[in-house]
Amino acid sequence: MITTKRYDYISIEKIGVHPSVGNHRHLDTAKVSHYVQDITEHGLLEPLVIWERNNNEYFLVGGFHRIEAMRAIRKKNPGYFDMVDVRVVSGEPDEMRALNLKLNADRVDTKLTDYFDTIIHLNNVNWSNDKIAQFLDRPVAWVDDIIQFVPGMPAEVRDRLAKETISWTRAKAICKAVRQSKPGHEAKELKAQLAALEKPATAGPKQGRVLTIKQAKRRLSDHLKSTPKTSYQLDGEDLLSLLLVIEGKEFTEKHRARVEAKFPHFFTKNSGK
Image (cartoon, rainbow, N blue to C red; front, side, top):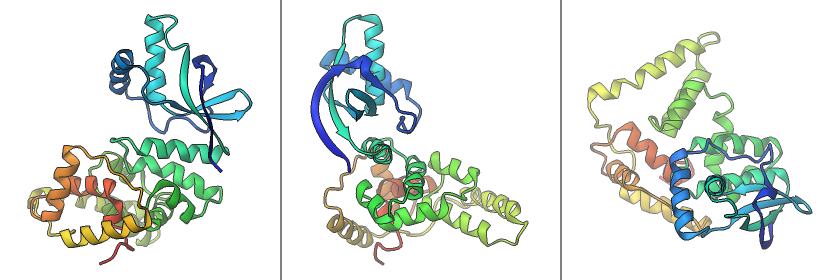
């Protein structure tokens, strides 16, 4: 069970990176540079999250960009940030990996594919789908689908999801088509499915309504009843995509993919009609 043991002030040199609890994506140099400027001007406003595996043995769980920024600051300013504010937590390695993902999921640029490896890992170590969904504040049906489709997902499909050029619904449909193809024809079916992705561009952006305002309100209401602490962080493109999808006239597959990444419960099979 994950618990916060204390808030502390410890040496930055004591903080390591555990092989199983690293950052879930590559460091963004632009983000590190932003934190260098922000931390230099205002200090560390949010404590790092540190896992104390054993007494005085610390591993970073949350704050990978910020600690990298502080290390950059220290190279130019010896003595700066010798000690840093931290939130010290305890738990099992699998729980720390899940907490790492949860902390990163609160960031604006978190993608659907960022969840995949961790959810599959937690499932493999016998976390129930309900437990995973509750911890990540996501619908159980969404977790069910990831566990069902991701292990056998073709790399080409996952790559398009990571780039947010196709929606999760479209990705699942492709996976189903490949699975249902005749034995030995999987590669041919995948090629045909990927080729079909290019066709909507020549036919124009109109795809028909896939989400009404009534559906969005009902599904959001149902989701908040089960996970009342849910919060959202949207940028301008996210908001525009949501409006276009609800309007149902000029949205593209990319717009739908953005909406599905931010509001997966709008499209899950158990979200109502």
